[in-house]
Length: 76
Image (tube, rainbow, N blue to C red):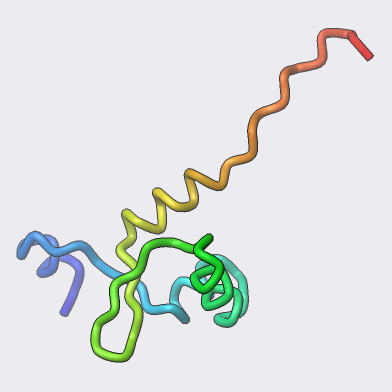
């Protein structure tokens, strides 16, 4: 099923754990470790698999931003 058809149904595309790991450039085990530590993106269990809504992944990534450092104005 393609993403156009999914959006027509009001459904959001989802990623598998391996797709998410590939997107982030990490090993699949890193995703499992983040989830078990409660630090990973929200996921949905579909049968035996975990799926990740793209909006949940984006929200999770936005929450990982480090605070911006103030521009040094000649101090230091």
